[in-house]
Image (tube, rainbow, N blue to C red; front, side):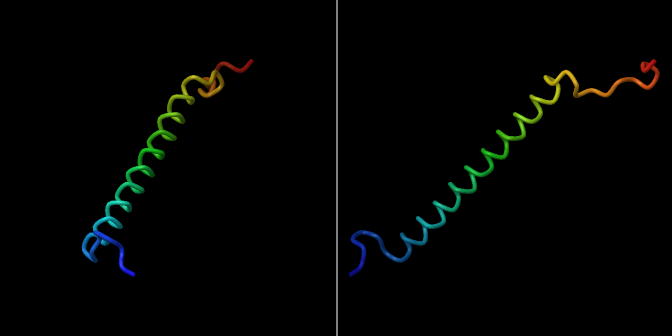
Length: 56
C-alpha cells in the first residue's frame, strides 16, 4: 500500500529536507560547544601560563 499524498519525488524531497535539518542541528551543537569552550578558557584562573621570570 502506497503512502497517501506522498509520491516518489515528495519522499525524496522530505529525506533531503530531514538530512538538511540534521546537518543544521549538528552545526548548531558544534558551534555551541565551541562557544562554551572559548568562554570557559579565559574564565578559568589557571588558564594563562605564568610569565617566565615570575617563579622564585
